[in-house]
Length: 189
Image (cartoon, rainbow, N blue to C red; front, side):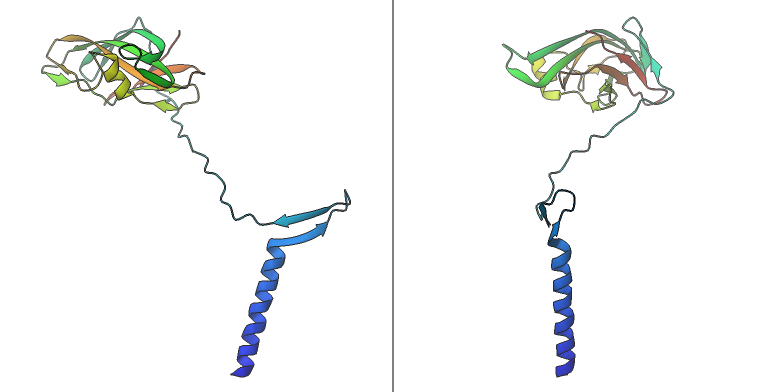
């Protein structure tokens, strides 16, 4: 048993020696004549956020501000857009980047009262980065916010949607109806 213990100690010492050599050693640089010391840094690298990309589907349909869309029982027309740095009374809510405000004329052409869908309008950058409606900024902006408005059969409302996006770049609106193709339109300011 004493002999087995010696063998185990020798093996452990060899492993420690090899590991130490692999992770930290000095070497001569033949090109510069200087000494380079390689060491292992146990500090974790900072996390780089992964931004999910959502490319435009191949069957997507383009539209312009002159077009009226018929999606999911609603007649929709994007009739205005603008950029602001702040929204709310007296500019009480500053943007992290810039706000893009969209104004939609929406008519319920369903045969019943219904809520306007809150999950089918998005803004996308030219890099296919998706931005959702900023509910706080939309609510602060005032009456007519996009989220959960009830429309009676045949009722028309002007709805507003506010997006907080980086100030550089170009953006496009995308509608994702429950059925049918995606509709998109680049914004021009």
